[in-house]
Length: 159
Image 1 (spheres, rainbow, N blue to C red):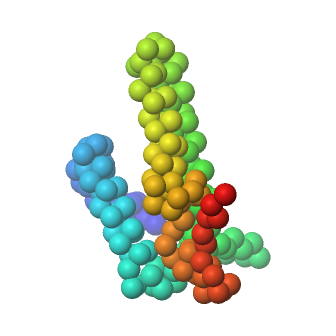
Image 2 (cartoon, rainbow, N blue to C red):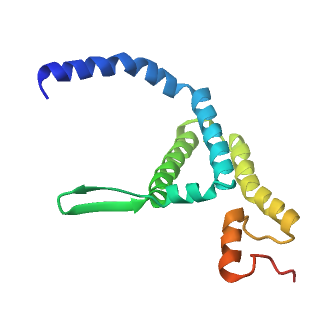
């Protein structure tokens, strides 16, 4: 690139940097996008358009650099890549709060601990109520695929 094209690109990026930065930093905006994406993903994965969702998640993505090739499915990148980054950042945030934030006092940690226990107990209680056993909550389409391949559905046996 020449200096003129770099300057034009730099000026263009500087014009959008501040509005984009304030937009991204707004907690309510990111929360609404996360909620909307969750609703759309749940609807898409459980609708009649499930096959398009499945095709998208199994789309190979990668890049090539000479003889070097890095390729994986979109589902693999999300499960193994982005989730690792997410939980790493979540762990760092919790550690920072425990060491230097609002959770330095043990009495402030109670809510965090109760939420963690509730996050495990509530799905188990819902599963117990709906299916009569403490099975892992399974995705409806996983159950359908299992039933299609083996001729029977996933169920809990009462003892």
